[in-house]
Amino acid sequence: MPLITAPVITPEEPSPPPVELPEVGFAAVTYIDPAGTRWPMTDLTRDWYTLAEGVSGLGAAPYALTSDPHPRGGARLRHVQPQPRTIVWPLLVKGADHTGFVTNWRALARAFTRTLRDGPGVLEVARPDGTARRIEVHYQSGFDGQGRTASGITWDSAVITLWCEDPYWVDTVPQTLHRESGAAVDYLKPFPSVSSSQVLGATTVTNPGDVEVWPVWHITGPATAITFTREDTGDTFTLTMANTVHGNLLAGEPVTISTDPPRVRSGTGENLVAGLNWPAAVLWSLPPGQTPVTFQLDGAAVGSAVDLTYHPRYETA
Image 1 (cartoon, rainbow, N blue to C red):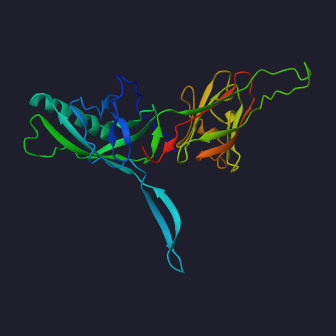
Image 2: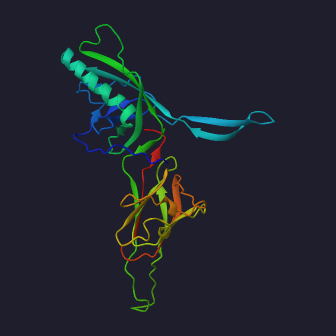
Image 3: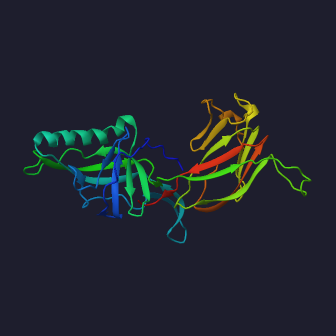
């Protein structure tokens, strides 16, 4: 999964009350512009709110299917490719007077169109149970008013089209997994026992989403080499610190490995991607369901740790 990078969001006010939306049911929707400003979209007490009739594009992701003709008739599916998503979002904007309406209209138009210059905005759909999913959006068209009789004075509506390069919805709460090396013990006291400074252990990672995700790994030293293996496929990759400009990880020093796009950075921003065991390295993804994985840190000691982080991805809002 491309781990989708959203603006830093600090809620400044409570979420808007839930309303009924097509393809979604009851939900509260907020748009977050590239600057991090939150715009409630379903609060009917505001001077702008979503017109539920006409909302579309919140359901399952679109796909392009590639097939080959079959000699006995029909065809055989060869490839499935997720396509960018298009969301249609009707919006009413009003004001107490013409000046107030124009101010709100201009502010909202800028909040959406700046996604073409400053990076994507985020459409966030929150459910009454407290869960929420989001998707990154770019403004495409539609913020030009309807031209109806009496519109454009104290009110007008726009039917906005939002383009999403990643068609999947992403959980706002990340899933994390932490493994840390403990203190060594005496083999014979009080009875024969073993503590490994190499392997943090095998574990099972559960992806509750609908589609695969591409995790981010955070490693804390000391360590000389780090190996991650997906046991069900045998895919693996190793970062050997001696092969990087940084050298071996000292106690407390961090390294972050992104699987999509492939990226390895030290805590000071050094590019360590050359330390991966190319071309054999496979920066694997996590499919839906349970996946057995193994983390191994060579040269580990007390404080050595691995943290896996990812946001589950879903077909629908």
